[in-house]
Length: 150
Image (cartoon, rainbow, N blue to C red; front, top):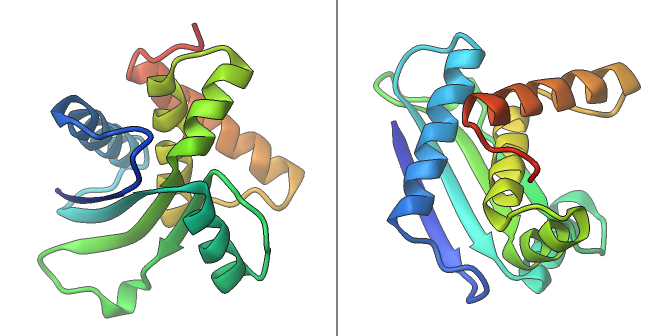
């Protein structure tokens, strides 16, 4: 597994523990989805302003968001590593939402990373049933990681 982290913010500084958490999330999520092989993911930790710019540029929505996912099409993949794509997380949103939902910053960033990773694996939440299924999977993975709401 390859995990590349780009830190472009100063609100939540990634350390080895955070990188280990992201790697464990990838392992648990791939196992949950019965995916085998060598996978790669890119994660960017950004400011609210940068994620707003990306949201406008790629989705036409001029507003901040907490997480964006950019999957890479399988036909462009090398044989040895399947790069799933890029996940972008606003650390300002992580901190604000952790306070709002009264749980830890670790739980919020783990949740957003799982959410982004599931998007890279083809999940979506446009329809109610899809949203319910995605939320169920997110909670199952958080439970496997023993990351609770409080």
